[in-house]
Image 1 (cartoon, rainbow, N blue to C red):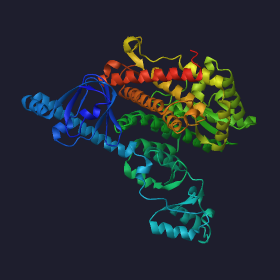
Image 2: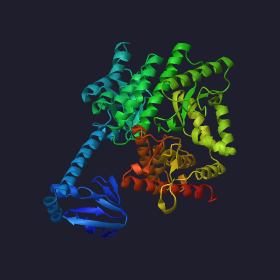
Image 3: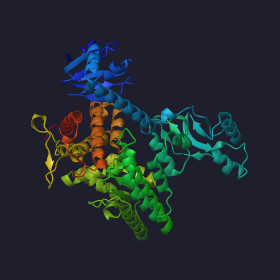
Image 4: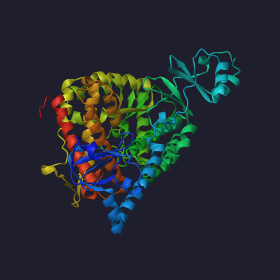
Length: 582
């Protein structure tokens, strides 16, 4: 048959199972929830589970690109099974692998894919701040909870736990008629309902908290989740490692933990469905090492003489680090520091960067580290530096913008960092700057040549490869950064930037359609999965590179499709921001 969007329902009837063999075209296999299970192309097949088991068809097909498909009905399939044992063994084995894969995925979803909202079993137990301590104790007893949220107009203002009742009320003999505002932990850490379990565990371990309020996108209090709730879901060695790092008592301990990371990652990557989480995990490890080193430095040399913000740039800021990522960090300092104060932070920057190197995180070849004077500056100096790049967008300036406009807070003063970000948002509103960024993005090309063939590079040993980072992931990161800056989005993570762009009206993100956003999300994830898989498997090629001959036909097709979509997005950015001036 020639399968199209118009006739797909006619041929793909749930009451008439068939084996479908794809000769041409492109199709998405979609599950009952509407999620894409896999993309099918030439040489792929589907439909055999129902033919083998007699069970109802669960998945459905969506035609993405019309093509020719061969159909084999139940009686013909059964005949071939009886007459040709090789035929039967092939599909029985395929079905077994499919079941194992489904079981594997369902196990993983309980850990890596599950959102916080899915673990919420009860509504928020809350009281206003003027309620009495006695009322809180009674309500906690009634609901059988160890903590209570303090809210005003359904928005979180504080938290009280059973530990607070022991330490702040009983131990200090506070009158139980006093208002909760007098003993609550104000402005507590919280997490949004759509965040993952991994993020919640990381937050709890970093700040040594056991009760984490859950909010919706409007900051309305939804409920509380505890460390016990999360650890019950799945014990995770990588997250436990991060916990040990935050509690380390010496640099020697941190170095030992750093050496555990590569082997731990290999095990972690085999137990998650979304391998791109490896980037978040690695960035989490680097964050933890950095925070603890800052703590150990202050423990030895005294508390910092003034407020400061230790920040990171590049892949660490985007939470997209790989095994080959190096350091990209800096110190944001207040204006008007004295010479002794500047010397203190010089020693802090040098200590942290040197020890991170010993923990296995390479020095930045471009010296973008807090140990460098150019990455250890006052807020005014940092802002002037960014302003110079924006107003004079030379090639070197564009290179700096790709690194420094991806930034994230790690340790120190959140207030200082927030005020710096507000100034950066104002600085970056420059149409000539956006045009220069769009032009710069198009100086890099995807590795697809004439007749839709891969354009391969060679190293000194004549290995053929495609650089997935340079020719794919970096281009997507650059495109998304451009739209995010234009829209005033402060997030650094590429996927989170795309999610934020989805929520904006089209005119605010310069006509980046939802379809374009979903395409960029899919391409980024696919290329990142391939890139990390190659690194973890150590295939002998240069870092971030892959030989397309080692991919199956579906992966090669998807890779070409991803590069094609990236190229379209590049050209669209040039047209929208640079008025097609390329």
